Image (tube, rainbow, N blue to C red):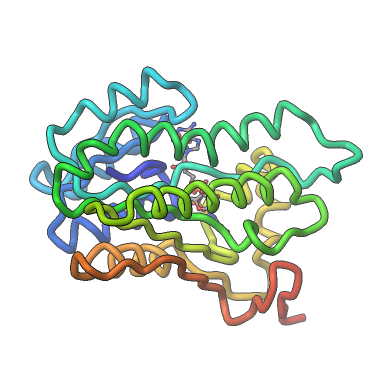
Length: 241
Ligand code: NAP
């Protein structure tokens, strides 16, 4: 099961997993995009299903789609705005927490029994360097990704001795629709994020997702941090003039 499969890292992860022989269930709100991706991958490799991770009944419907589940890849998420704390809008924080934190909780909880039943369940969280490198304007997103990271860690602790692996992949800048969403559709501002530097591509992250998912059952890759060469810290980016 891949959440956030309609775009960016989720769509690329679905492609990489399908290429590796998985049958992938694609979840997100924009169903037309999921259906196009499922058609591209073929009926043997993919099924599209509507999923809103902020809606418990949608998560329940999504989790009931399959009798068996070996892997869940959490990609649904994102940031809203770059507001300093003094001007923080609670509504944006709520969406960020509902999607990046509670969404991960809801989907994980709904699939947990099936993952354990599989005998080798795996949860892969696409987190962010924002979880441990806070930056001005990032507080809501930083806090949400830090919370999701704690959730992943506790999930691993609570299931030691059981057939469940939990991995967190924390990317730096990746060229997806992330910045377009963060800046409410302002394409110029989103493009400026990556100007003069080479970000990671969604495919770069997807390769790591597929690698993590193809390790033998006794190998748990806890946490992987990956960045573009041009980005040493969230706030330290080399840009060509
Ligand atoms: P993206 O292209 O904007 O993709 C975000 C995905 O999340 C979309 O498929 C979107 O689908 C889905 N989504 C958002 N809200 C949802 C909801 N309520 N229910 C279900 N799906 C929802 O951005 P991306 O870069 O691939 O982001 C994937 C993950 O990587 C996010 O968690 C993001 O925080 C993280 N990340 C991104 C970067 C970066 O620089 N791009 C860096 C580090 C971490 P719908 O809108 O169709 O529902």
